[in-house]
Image (cartoon, rainbow, N blue to C red; front, side):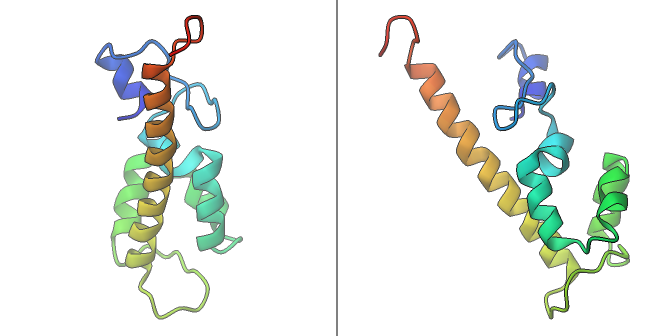
Amino acid sequence: MTNAKRISRHFTNDSRCPLCNAQVEDVDHVLRFCPTAHSVWSGVIKGDRIHEFMQLDFKTWIVLNLSSHSGYRTWRTKISYLVLFCGSCGVIVTLWFSVTHWIGIHHLWIDPVRGL
């Protein structure tokens, strides 16, 4: 769950991204705008299309990239773009979850004033 969603459920009062400290960590940030995600996409999408890829509104971005006619091409590969897109999202979410889970565990169990 992103911090933006945690705020809406009153689980936290901090919406910042724990990876890059951006003001709001929402799904769009996690999948596209966090520097970790951006570095994955920069390795997948050809340089002349990356700006357009990052500028679409989130709903259009998801729909376009899940369609077979996305128009985005990567390096020459026999892997379909849809598989590459979904795999890249999977890598990003796994990296995000691993780090935020680690931070969450340590935040819950370690009190900076009293220690453990």
